[in-house]
Length: 164
Image 1 (cartoon, one colour):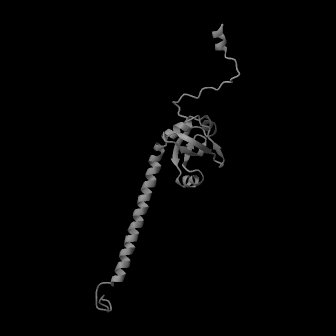
Image 2 (cartoon, one colour):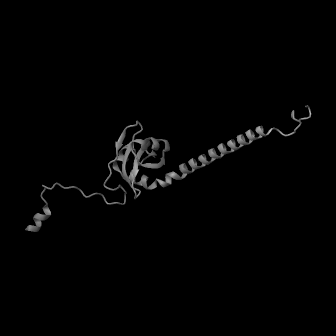
Image 3 (cartoon, one colour):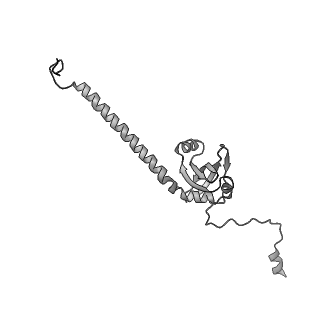
């Protein structure tokens, strides 16, 4: 027995042990690969994701309500866990973490087909939610503002001049 052989005289381990070793090594390699893959994807999204939301950041900066409360939005990143929770009560919404001049804020927004904000909420640091007041189909800085509503009963001075 002292010569390294097994009780049946064989020098190789039993096949049952070999399968457990192979399964264990395969599981360990799969787990490490999964961790590396998910880690690389998460890191990639965090580094590139803020560029994807650049048009949304510019649109948020054009909203006076955001400027008054949060200040200038410098960077947006998607919050995956909060977006999942938000999607249960508001389908189609994503939660973005924002670095602003007045500290960290969050925005829960629904982005339309034209990459504009359709509907949204500003989430203050204390957790209170404030619905964003959007102008029509979006708030791009290059869009002209909505026309000023006038009182229909008000007298139009230009029409008085034309009748004289």
